[in-house]
Length: 418
Image 1 (cartoon, rainbow, N blue to C red):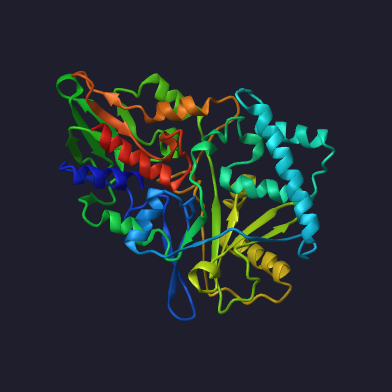
Image 2 (spheres, rainbow, N blue to C red):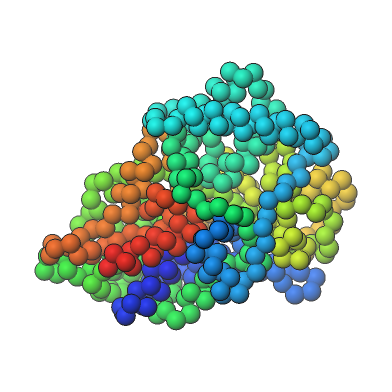
């Protein structure tokens, strides 16, 4: 998304732009894929999915302009480990306790830094309030870990400092996935597909020329380059930089965390589950969160979302093991015999060649604001303050990290920098 927004803005301003894309498709971690239905098919998001806050959010306006229908998703039907819906008063009581502990933990972290994890602090607060770690309470924790990209025990105290800059309004899902959105953005652009970059080399008089060497040996030249590869790729050093990146940027790459969120999307012959935006089941070992695709696609589609340590565990399972476990959980949620799925897709974003992650998080002891800003700093050539190499993506913005709109804004930011 950051590469597309940057390229479109630069093209609009009269620049000659070439997009170098490693995959056969655009969108990166925005990946819409077709699930087969008894009649036809339904596009679903295997990567980024929701728009988080639509009030005055330019990305929400963009989606509307392209003509992709959205629907708010918010309510959750939560079931206990026996498979019975949680008593409403008990649900409210546990939810209140969880939020109370969360708020107190936030208060203790405000303006402070620590090498201990947010999870350790949260557990200390719970113990101080004599709050037991029931399966339901752990579900609330696991539910939040889905949006964090990692477990509480790997989060730093500053993991949520960007919340003040978020958008108000509903969180919405896209009926037709992000595929038509990214394809519409890409349509007027000059794009080279299946082009993996091996080396970015600043050369020429005073580093005024940037050479990009592809894996197949092709060498491209440009006045400036915007690097929009994910943090996971930068960490693996798949791309070499000559001269090496400035020390602050290398340190930021090392210090920031690469989060993970995996999915299993399934289609069925018909809808047999409850009418709620989200379905949740709390077990002793795992907590499950299921997005009800039927509410925003009008088709019998479900999306299981695996966060925290579960997201890593899932990557070691076979597709058959994942689907079998999902059907087991559905049977408990619905209290009926579950039909075989018509189709399914699973993800393993941690193993995906050109991502190696889902989105960024702030680990313990890391100054998130400083490191995210360092990631967004350009590398200048030796003639004035002309940017030769710039960086965009959700990992380069302090104000909206780990979000689709954050990636979009970062691309616009770098276009303006030129």
